[in-house]
Amino acid sequence: MTDLVAAPARGSALPPLRIARVPLLHPDAQLLVGEVQQEYVRRYGSPDATPLDPAMFDPPAGAFFVAYVPVDGVPGPGSPVATGAWRRRGDVLALGTTTTAEVKRMYVAPSARGLGAARAVLAHLESTAREAGAEAVVLETGLAQPEAIALYASSGYVPTAGFGLYADEPLSRCFAKRLEGEAPTEPPAWRAEVVAPDDAALAVLRRRGAAEAGARLAAGEAPAPADVVRWVVVRDEHGRGAACGGVRRDGSVADRWVEPHARDDVLGDGLGAERTLARALRLSSPG
Image (cartoon, rainbow, N blue to C red; front, side, top):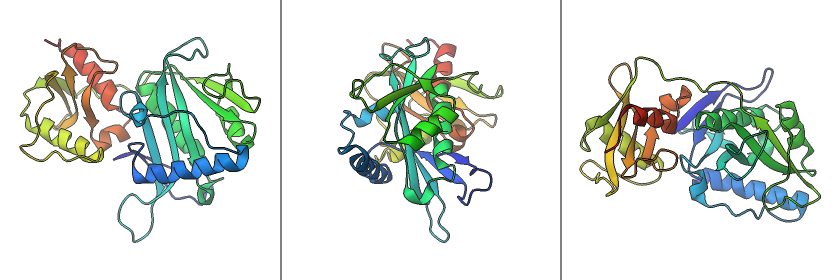
């Protein structure tokens, strides 16, 4: 589940954050989404009414993250203190590109504010969106959130044309940032290969992915979806499965992967499942 352990800001009293990718309907995500909606009510008089389908934040369409701080003596990821998400937006032109990702649900609980959590989550959103192919990130905030505007301005965001549900609202402000640099490359010793549906590494990765999605895929209960023509596994330098995904019959990459999943440490190294699998598909022609 864990994607990154982020160091706190220098001099911060906040312990290292554990930033985990979770579904939008995960209980911790829903807890913090409820809090941010209450915050909108206090500041604007109503919650954010932007329609959001949970599938918008499922890979490869997007990603939703919860940041945790460890709790001494309590097993598990810790206490949820912040959220952030992004979703693909091919309909928003910003800084010369429509290959954009929109930042959503940036929120830090009162107990963790002013300690660098928001900046750590924002940086993680930018990194993962870039890995997924986004050339720029865009977001919408409002004049009733001056601390958010200050964060974005100090992080390199510039004003951009209004978009979305609140584009014409006088309090709404939209910002964009170009994502510079190349995404991290795969370690050269790693390899991608097409495997049989009963491959042992594939089975392990599929079960882990299903468990993180809240489903159960027990041994012997792993039927391949009917439209999958081949499975791809990326193996690390030790031959262990690092990422997997199914290729649909039409062979497209952008939004057609079936059950994409990567090991926790792979995500922590900045190697996203979808980007790894896209490379794998380039190495093998779908039939």
